[in-house]
Figure (tube, rainbow, N blue to C red):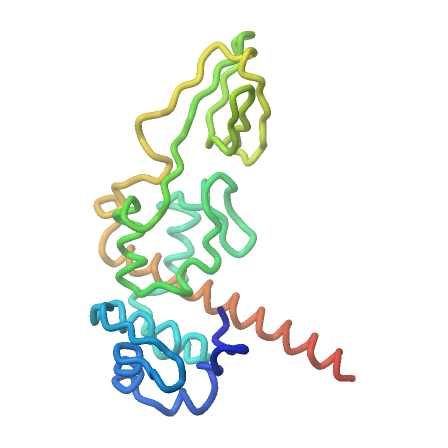
Length: 225
């Protein structure tokens, strides 16, 4: 995951690889290096190949190689404000619990892949469907179904709390027609606001990687003392 390699392959994040151009690396991806045991990935289209190389540059610490499409500070305000993303998603330890954590979401995706995940979530993001549970004593709960078997189910409500129910205790169990992730961000947010939001996701991923790398270096220094 970090590109450092192992028993079967060398590091792809070291200085030797960094000196190669993007075109050279894409050629290696497409043609492989049979003598060294690396297979050819000739079926990858140009866009996917560029995404792979973009992630490789990210692993090499070249976070500045990817230009931000907007203003990350404005994107943060949208994430926690107008976009209401934080009601469901958490990023950098802040936000909701009901949907996926997004701190590192942008670390392995291109700008256009992130944009599509926001505006067309059904294509790239596994959708959570909201369910409504009504108990026999009239209490109602709305949230995401986390676990279910023949006798019980576990629901996570929108405040992040988990609720366990035995099915004989339920009066009704209804799946809501709309997915948890809204599909109207393409119209709810302007193109500029989308760019700002994407930039915030990218910067958050970069900051997390930098922080994680710093913590790893500290631990290694301590172990070597």
